[in-house]
Length: 342
Image (cartoon, rainbow, N blue to C red; front, side):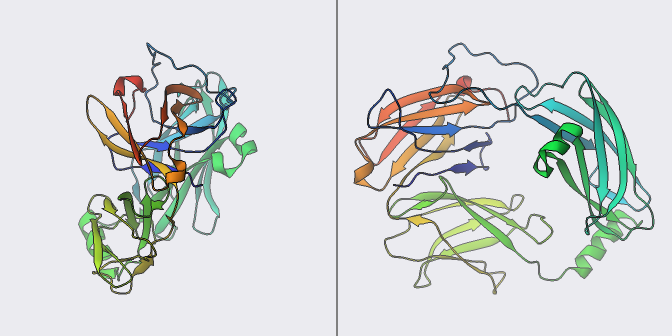
């Protein structure tokens, strides 16, 4: 039996849904679909007219801190100063952490050597700061890293990271001409992201596409999905910030690959096609409702009770129990039931 995880970055509402099975204590033969939606919300508190209560098996949400540095820009010249403001937040409420904290800010080169570092004083979640860029550095990409003493104990995964571009002093026009003149054929990194985490054989599947170069910059491409006979069964275009989406239906025992006509040497196999499984997909959004669908390609998974639940920062904000009678089951949610966010 297969269950899926869905990441949908191509809609007005950005969210992550994790789907995992869990037996329910009070419902025999029932599987629990635990779907966690992580949203970016404003600092103001949000109240709900119909709270959904606590999810069985979940005690208290984890407590963690979040750090963000807002820089004055992303591109600098040798000898410039990086001006920034730090925001230290409670990870659950997104409110500024009261009190006083130490903040370590560092500028690091590609070899991991610290070029500059500052120890800043955070008061009630805010701290202005700056780092100077020596004019003796080599042009290229540098890492701005920041962390509190608490995050230092937790490890690198909790640090703030941002990549900055540092160039020689010249006009913006000359810089762009030089980049274009020196650029050869870019190395493409293509991420194929099926909604639900995998493709279901015999079902029409949606998938997101993300294309970047070796430096992490987005690249617009036009791509094709080919079957094992070389016929085109799907197309996509990543014109907007290297992102696009496509839909296609994998057939039994067929193998597929991605081709980019503008890059003859690029071919990538499509993996994670399941003969039997069940997953959740985000269908569409409007002002009145958000549409999801639960889809399966296995009769053995039909006729069971399931629980669809949405969690936000450890609290259940929506849940719906249903019986999967058909291969597809639609679920509609009012946007008013979810916290404000992007």
